[in-house]
Length: 278
Ligand code: ADP
Ligand code: MG
Image (cartoon, rainbow, N blue to C red):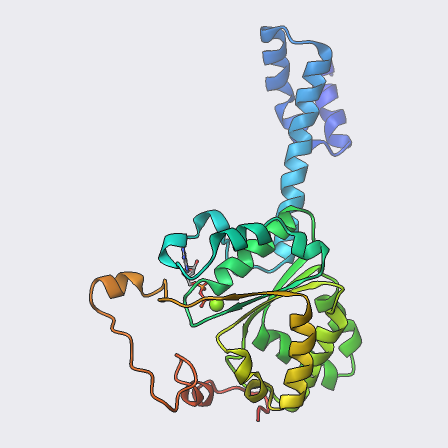
């Protein structure tokens, strides 16, 4: 076997697949450019290191369960002037993760709450922190099921271990008694230990109604808000921006009985939830 082929196989045997794949090329350009042995090795191992870093990051992004790739760089700040771009950029420094501070994005649908929550989560993963994304509905269905099947403690760990837990769309559906208690347990257990990034279309005044119990709501908000950044977004839905421009969409007048822009109780009634919600 020629030495070159032997070296390639040795690299593969050592698991250095990316270095093995570029060996030929690197050797050619090394002899062509007359670079030193050290520079050659540096280049070859650099390829392997870089590829590994990318694979590792990809795997950790997969573990975080982000529903889509959303980046701060893609956010159109001019469209949503109620957001203080500097505040969000400061959050992106991730001091909040180290301090186990919470972030609450509040506002009507389509204003970028989930986008910003995911973008900060992706930054955290890129910086080496564990993150996990889940909708409030899924989270509580999951915990409620685990509770009934007497495996709550184990399941709770999924939501306690990541440094950043993103709970999306809190408050769209009212919670059952059990779900409200489980959410309280989660918030208490993460308090001062890990960041919770929460998005909601409901103002704090409506949390009593969402949780079905003003006492639990106060206890949760007390812990959630103690170390927190609250980002209140007011503005138009980005989803409807083109329709609006074309004149297809006119904002519906909000009836007095409706608590939010989804049409309040109608939305909940139509959701067909299989949980015993109150
Ligand atoms: P919300 O969670 O507040 O309902 P999303 O964050 O899901 O809204 O935003 C709806 C869609 O519009 C997403 O695809 C999001 O990436 C996009 N979007 C929202 N606001 C902006 C913005 N200011 N710049 C760029 N894209 C935006
Ligand atoms: Mg959203």
